[in-house]
Image (cartoon, rainbow, N blue to C red):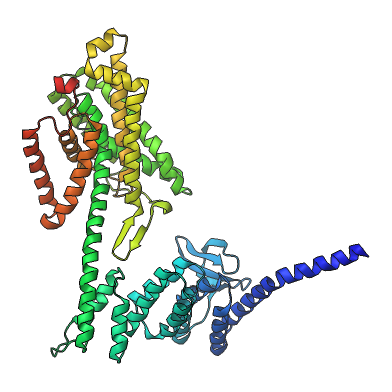
Length: 542
């Protein structure tokens, strides 16, 4: 008896637990079937009912219908999202979200019939659904979209969303979106409220909307007839432009630091080969190029895992460029120590050989390296400031490489040997240090770091045979300005030149900015021949 009672209780509990979900599932499937029919009035009713469901699949379904991307498979009438792919159509199940096929013929699919009225209805429902979405970022994005494209049809959904919204920042965005819609309201008080709602909301589109209201018509009258509203709008615009200028300085500084990070990665290897060893290596740019091509090859070998391929490319590029550096040092450079002009000519010839070798293997055409998903997009601080993830990662990556290199040189046995050979080769040799081996490893280390720079550069520009030539002169400028062979000096010089270049460039142009930076460095070296931070070494003492 007790066992029977427990079975009944268990069955009832399961029914209570799963019946709402099953009902929701049945409702979603039933309404989908209504959308697949031919009666347009029933489709409109199904759309309204679909928007009422608390189901994550509703929004993508409405968006697909709005964009004519909702289909049924002819074979089994299954509803799918369809988009163009390389070999046909890529289809995804509406119900499960699983990718069903990536090469389906359009003849095997039947598009869900819509008209302008249905698409307009779907657009309104999408806006309302986004504004009521459980995810805060979706609601905020919907509000920003309405600020960019205000539409009187969305006024009621906005009012409903404002009444329900609990997050202050999103509620402000919703109020601004409402203001963007009511800027054309016939009532002066409503327009004044709309302008006041925009006060302090940091977004470029707000400035654009208000400046449009402050313009004059062809007959000389103002677009905004009320002097009070115009005065308030002008005050709001002035305040926002001050904020915009402040964030512009931050943005320029960030881009300057990202440029400085690229220069740091390109120059830190040269700081070893040129600054410490005294070798004018004109093939340093080609080590950067080899690192970039290594990234491209690794992605070809790992086409289904682009995110991991970039991580694999870092050690691979270091090994390829480092090995080439060791070969160059053992084959050519070791015979030319103490003759800087001859090393310049020899390494210049090597750079031409490497460029031609790459052209022969990969062709002269540029190659595009795919940016992983985790490096795509940008970090939105506000409507005035966004920081791109790829540049942000490169800044962090450059700092990690610098501090890793400093740790290697200061704490490792190889770093100790390298410093000993740099400061006094004869004494180091008499102490049993294999100076030839140290020279080869040091040159390989500098070249390997240049290869790592190539990995970073592949995320900012196309990969081509002339990639390294664009950075070789800048690398020498950074090393000389910072102090020959000093890593801290290289860091300060790279970041300083990067930031200065980004602030000068808008005023003078890219070419003149480089000329001005070169003139500054020449004048600076006249006063401080050893750069910002002097370092004693074989090259400096020689």
